[in-house]
Length: 199
Ligand SMILES: [Zn+2]
Image (cartoon, rainbow, N blue to C red; front, side):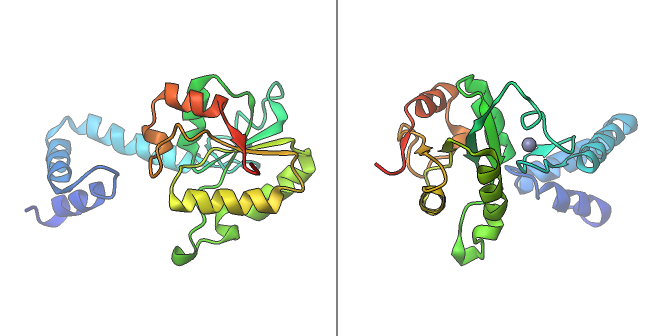
């Protein structure tokens, strides 16, 4: 086990997804043994990205602008709004080339046990956006998990009277699965075969 400064680096690296004890130790050792300038370039790139990126004022997605590229794109359909859990999901859906509407990022799923209620999923902002744009279709592209289901039910029932068509992805997505780990083709099919939440 490392001690001192190296242990501190290891402890911080372990905060990254998929990095366990062994990998963190290997990375920490690699970083202090690599060219000093290259290691500092990594640190500077992290600092730049973290200081620049923020949540889009309209849709919550992470962006380097006040209003993201999707919200400010006038060629995209304002009447279609796709709800996703996080920014990465936006890019996964973009890769399918199946969708030309706008997005809204919840950043969380409803989870009362963890203290995440309607505010935690930006529901008030979503409601305002839906009313302001007179959205006609709301696509709930959320992971088919217990939290995903309760979020779909909550939003579906609360916005049913304001939006003509509230849809969700087809069940081609395995229950308990994660959009992130679904192939682009499966996601593309799930999006194309989306169905009304009311049915
Ligand atoms: Zn945006």
